[in-house]
Amino acid sequence: MTSVERLYKNFGVLADAKDQATQHEAEYLEILSAVKGENNVKRLAAQFIPRFFKYFPSLSEKSLDAQLDLCEDEDSSIRRQAIKELPNLCKTNNDHLIRISDVLTQLLQTEDPSELSVVTTALIALFKINAMGTLNGLFSQILQGEEAVRECAIKFLSSKLPLELLTKEAEEFLLLETKKVLTDVTRDEFVTFMHILASLQSLQTVSGRQQLVDLVVEQAELSKPFQADDSTCVDRLMDCVRQAMPLFSRNVQSTKFVAYVCVAVLPCLTAVTSSVEERDVKLEVLKLLAEMSPYCGDVDSTCLANLYTCLLEYMPVPPAEVENEENGSLQPGEPQLQFSYVECLMFAFHQIARKGTDFLTAEENADRLKDFRTRLQYFARGLQVYIKQLRLSLQGKTGEELKTTENKIKVVALRTTSNINVLIKDLFHNPPSYKSVVGLSWKPTTKPSSDTEGTKRAGSATSVQETVPTKRMAVRPKHNERSLYHPPGGKYSERVGRAPTGGEFNANQWGFGQRRGGWRGRGQGLGRGQY
Image (cartoon, rainbow, N blue to C red):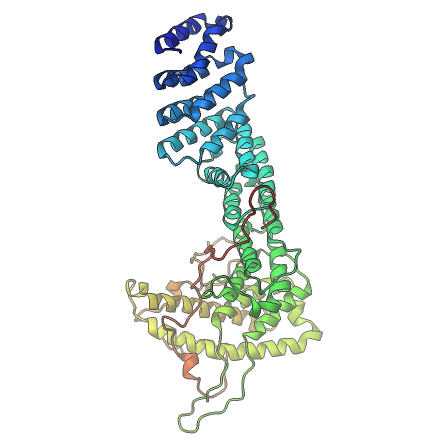
């Protein structure tokens, strides 16, 4: 059996021979045989085999097998040493790089933190040698490996992928392989791969972002009928929209998603179900529609008609007003105004209808416009009372007081109603106008720059600072202030005018990006179907 002294002697012979080391094959074979020796001998063999690997191409397979045997040794220190040296086998010849990357990918499932660190470092070292070959080994395990290895490989790509080492060709290969993986992924895997692709330099262009949107469209299965009673179908659509949302712009449009939601989802919105019972999934769908609408291109009349019809469901016609003789208030039975839903639908309609103004202004649509204006005026009556009550409730509140849960809800409610108020003023014009710009109530407030093209006129902003009055702000309008509406006489029900409490308002309970529910889990082995 080879001893430590013998190993050092063989090492000396090979090192002194330099480029003539090929003449000392016997000494190298003796080093290879040391992998079956004692631990101290194995530890030296793990270092010496890669050192002289390049001089013996005819023994490359045998050398690689010997090194891999050491990577599976019972002694963790030997394993770490052997794993650390694996990239050195590829420094002068990449013939075995894919195989070594494949092996290192399998070793990612180790439960030893120090060993995992060595494996990760070795994989990154391979990326420095040949990024595409290393990705090849990783994806071979993602596509064909066991579930545990697959999960570890995806985790490595999402957290440790050295983006700065990827060439354009490597990024193209990563995109190609990811498309194969996306034919069958879990919900979390889909999100992870979209984040990986979105970080690639080559996909930061308009065409690159369009490729990503096309990938999401394919995952969303927009060519299939929408099943409102299938929570998996609903969750998949919403998750896909969320992944596509950061990619939308004037040049990368959301038209396919907007058209699908308007044509396939809105007609059955009341039947939409969720895997989370307490989740207002209908409101979440409408929020996503509203966020997509500014990036929508031209859509057909059916899309706009469905959106308009859905909006009217939450904008009632004025009821017959019967006053209570004793106190002059309206009797119970007034429609309850759904401000959160109306903000989403009216914002989306305001964005999309500007590309098809004839929908309201064409001569044959005169009755439609008349009915719409009646509903707008009635809705504005309740809206003004609600805004007044909210302003009174928040008046004089300090910054700290506004941070309480109840006041946060009221602030969002005030933003919501203020947004609707701005949109109503635009739509009530004759003909309807589409010039105002509002920031959706559940999105962070941003101040538009003064040189932004299409910036709305002063007074249209609806930020918290503008909607929350201070002590010195007059609550009542000035005498000479123009008022758009002149509601008929009568008082409003206490329900419509009451300021919201902690559990009433549902404008922003569910933030964008929260993912709940699940997609169909992947199958085991190679027999996987999409979702």
